[in-house]
Amino acid sequence: MKDKQVRIQNTVEIIEDREDAVWSMDKNYGLTAFNQSFEERFKKEFQQDIQKGMDLRPFYKKGIFFGACGKGCEKALNRYATTSKNTIVEEDHTHVHEFSFQPYIAASGEVIGCCIWQKDITKNVENVLRLEESERKYMEAQEITDVGHWNWDMAKNEITWSDQLFRIFGQVPEEFEATYEALMKIIHPEDREAFNEDVERCIKEGIPHDIVHKIIVNGGEVKHVHQKGRVYYDYGGKPFRMSGTTQDVTKDILANHQIVQQNKELEHFIHIISHNLRGPISNLLMLSKIYEWGKDEGNDDLVKKIEHTTEKLDETIKDLNFSLSLKNATKEQFREIDLQTVMEDLDGLLSEDIANSGAKIKTNFSEAPSILGLKSYVVNILYNLVLNAIKYRAEERKPVIELTTTKTDSHVILTVSDNGIGIELTPEKEKKIFDMYGRLSSATGGKGLGLYLVKTQVEAMNGKITVSSEKEIGSTFTLYFEI
Image 1: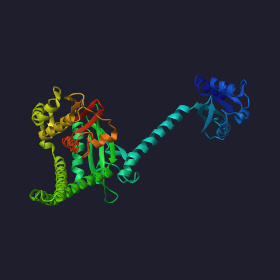
Image 2 (image 1 turned 45 degrees about the vertical axis):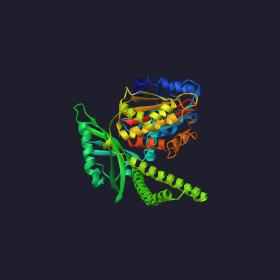
Image 3 (image 1 turned 180 degrees about the vertical axis):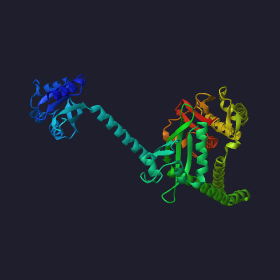
Image 4 (image 1 turned 30 degrees about the vertical axis):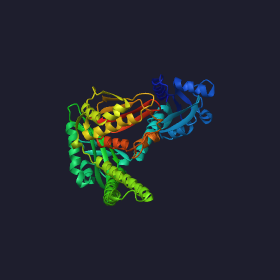
């Protein structure tokens, strides 16, 4: 028995320099061996010195740190190795301690005592909790955005899906074995070839996998998904793994289809209405031309009002048809447009306005001398912007209009700035400026169609336009055109 106690003492001393508290006791709960950490813990909790042979049972009962030891030691003395956790607050911090209870069994089979090993596992528990919280947030984000994650092990031909991806594809995790062949059966037959080609191109050329395609789920339901991913290669340049995301974009696709259809129906409706109205309008205008003026002053006034209203209606219908025709431009029609040539055209169109206003037009196209688009559109865009700058000039100074270009990796940026009256520009006013019949100011005449046509033509060339303005300082229109 004495030899066994020596071996136990030697075992405890091996871990003397550890922060974990380790001690052993005999079957009567008498302390037989301990390390320094146990001694420090004991003194801290009970404020008394420790002695070998002392009965540990009363200390287990009243202890906080050692409170989990009573039941654990009892099980160990009954031949059951076990562990338990004890959570306590120390110095305003919560700590989690794990206690392991291991029985000592003699060669005869008799239990002669047990060894207890305490570990502070607070950091491990916190790491697990952080990991669980991170996983929970990740799963919530996938569910909210309807995005699932996937990973394809090419060597094993095994595909791992997140829970959200199983929901998107209408599959049950325990019942569906995700392989490339199984995935191909879910993809709509019309899109399988395109999907395969995109994956093969991604693997061969190392470009991102990015495709929107249809899938068939739940016995016939068609969904649209946006799939993105990339390939990973080993040191030898051989592809071994591919991972990415899949998002359910069915609602967006159907909404876009509906918008396109509604736009087509609206255009068709406008064409029909304008066609049906053009005949009666022409007749009314013709009747006003053959009307015998001067016989009846009252009738003359009435016919004049009818003529004026009819002309306005005729102009409105022409504007609608013109704005619709602008939206039918295609990229195949685009050409490189030299901006200096456009300015030469503007000089001819605006020569009278420039002369009457004393306007000075400055240009600097050195950084980007041309843009990609349709020349007639570009001429009309700059015509309206320069004409507006002249119209809305300040009375106390002559108008100065500056046109400059800059260039980024993706766009040519054209700015048209003036020193006119400007306006206090709120976000709401900025939107209305580009509306049909919206106007920059009520101080001058005009229908306000110019800026609507400008915006329509800019967008027809895949561009965008913004405006900034300050009252009594001037306005700046910034146009972005794709390279």
